[in-house]
Length: 367
Image (cartoon, rainbow, N blue to C red):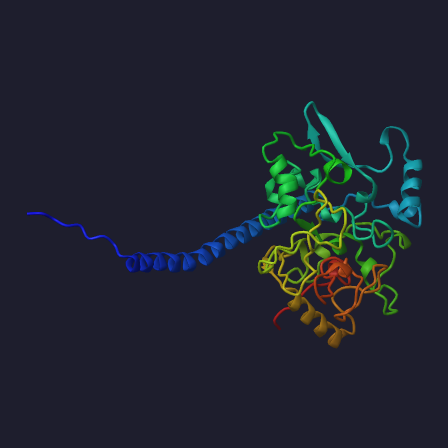
């Protein structure tokens, strides 16, 4: 008996292909969301480890916070340059002036240093405004409690494409503590990680506080004798509301915009690219580490709502608008922390210019 084989018709094949396409269309977004969640979880884990390093440093330094600036620097001049010159003149010889930042070593034991603008927690004005060692929690002082490598992946969020490509992909397999990345970035390839400390919390709290009761929430740190002395952890009055570290770049809720490099910033840090910052979009929801150790994503709109509440109840907002960086609380206000380079009308400087510094808060509680 002869058997016949029936082939699929074109219509049947089209039905099968349509079903497969439908399944792929359903699965791909789910896979994409799973990948995004995995990257978010990694970033949260990174920040949790940073919190452990911060606390370990504090425990070993009598409750002090990280500082890379000599406490007495403001006694040697009324601005950064004159104070540095005065301090270095008073400490010549073997001491070599103000200590430089140790980034790491490379075989055979060549030590990499960095000085200059990095020796301040953050500069409020001048050519270095908005820059300082608050951007570098991976220096040796903290790195010794982590993986011990300046470009360890723990300092970089998986979603942070430009820093990841410039630093991690170049240095991930390098065995030394410091990886010489070449001359593509500033200072021969010194790339800032994805996370930054709160510079407001690194200064004496009076720097961003109303110390004279005149309604002005800023004083030049070189105008008071202890302006550059980092406060102790115990000075934090609202540990569940004050951010200690944050994802510096706009990584969450980008909605597939693909805007990894901010065209308004030329000659960016990462091989010419400079990403949009966490405060450059209403949709931004950076992962934050708070002083009580909890991790939370807080959106820009949430912070703006908290600031409006603060203005209504206390008369001032959650971040100072009185520094030389300027800025305001209204949507159209530039200034603050690089708000002029934002993507929309968002105008925030939380975490960076927190009113009252470590004694202030960056969000409000539910009550």
